[in-house]
Amino acid sequence: MLDPNFPYKGRQIILSSDRVLLHSKNEGIFLFGKKMVALSSTDTINFDAKNAILIDSDKIELGHKASTQGEPIILGQTFLLQFLNIVTDLQSLASQLQRVSDTSPAASFLAIKAAGDKLYTTCKNLIPRLQNKDNPQYPLSKVTFTK
Image (cartoon, one colour):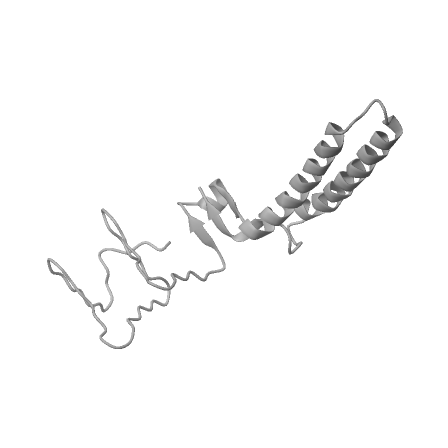
């Protein structure tokens, strides 16, 4: 973030009042700054919209220095899909373990082995996705960080 440079030596416009209101009756209001646009308040800043609030940037930090002192957020759909796969396989293994029987040990062993093999394959396929940040299924954001 750039410092506001007070006192400023260049050309500028200062509006000062107890309250300032900008209203666009039919279109929008645009604020542009070559280096930055800053919104600041000693209390609260509100963003309200009926349809969407869009933030588009190469890097989004939720909290001061979040990308260096915080951690990336989880990509919800990517993480959920991977988590559901492993939980489903764990549930299948648990189901087979519940059915272990002294009367049919060979069948129980084969069912447990099949469920174990499936869980092993799921984990084996998931580990590289969790370790490779360049993989499209990597569950952590490369853009948004929080602290």
